[in-house]
Amino acid sequence: MDKLEQARNIIREADKEMAALFEKRMHAARMVAEYKIEHGLPVYDAAQEARVIERNTALIEDETLKDFYVEYIQNTMAVSRSMQHRIMEGMRVAYSGVEGAFAHIAARNLFPDGKHVSLPSFEAAYDAVVKGECDCAILPIENSYTGEVGQVVDMMFSGSLYVNGIYDLPITQHLLGCPGATMTDITQVVSHPQALAQCHAYIQKKGYREITAENTALAAKRVAEAGDIHTAAIASLETAQLYGLQVLDHDIHESKTNTTRFAIFARSENKPAVTAGHTFILMFTVKHQAGELAKAISVIGRYGFNMKVLRSRPMKTLPWQYYFYAEAEGDEDGAAAKFMLNELSEHCAMLKVVGCYKA
Image 1 (cartoon, rainbow, N blue to C red):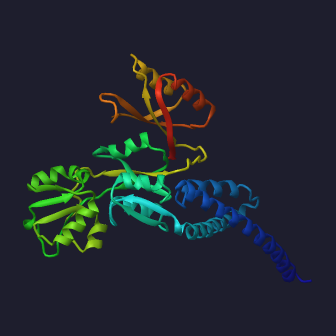
Image 2: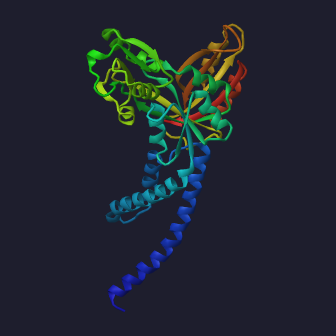
């Protein structure tokens, strides 16, 4: 047997072993896809893939092959993602608004293969997941300029769903008019209250009358349907393309770092591996006694958890009483967290971990 035939035999034997291992790996990838559907998670996880590459490359002893192995494992993971995308095509993702709304853009970016289900309100999108009609919901919880979205945060406090991810979407607002309209024609603008607030200085300067809508995309749709050259919508470029509107003015929002945080809500809690930036969300009420809030905050810090966010919200059922929303860095399942939560409960009338996410 010559050297070439000997090499080919080795390759055939390796290919046979790799085919069996490929099937084993893809079966596991299918299980991952099923888990992601159940917990409302996107297919692509850049941090996890980086860990796989680092861990597996360390197993290659021949230094001259490491670069080739990185390319090989990247291609292997791309194939796994491709299969997961196909499996997740039936995933139903709820969002509030109509096609082109920022929530729809976020849902499309996170779950490009899912079935995006348009619902008329935050509550309807949330309830669709609670009832099992959808697998997850993408809802805004905070804007960098106008602050928290109180209605969604209230549902986090009183509802049963978990937050399994946070996604930051840069928000760019534009002035959209009917075909043929000019800047001098516009006398009034229609949009969601948050978008109007984000563009308040611009609206005041122009002297436009404000009209509110349920969301930015619906505002654009109404302007397109009405065909009134005196009315413009404040919305995204995507909505201009969807509804045949023209962009009269670009980037009219005040803050040039305008970003909205969207949360992924699902019925099952996800427990990702704890890495740098791992953050969990706490919601609680404190007992009606002097100093209880200060004691509760000190407990969180004493166990080494860096509290990045602390906000209060009024309780709808009890006038002049409040609940608290906190985000803390660290492992909510570790021993320190168990001690912390146990001691924290001594000062809290209600306490729950709503979910976690990776920065």
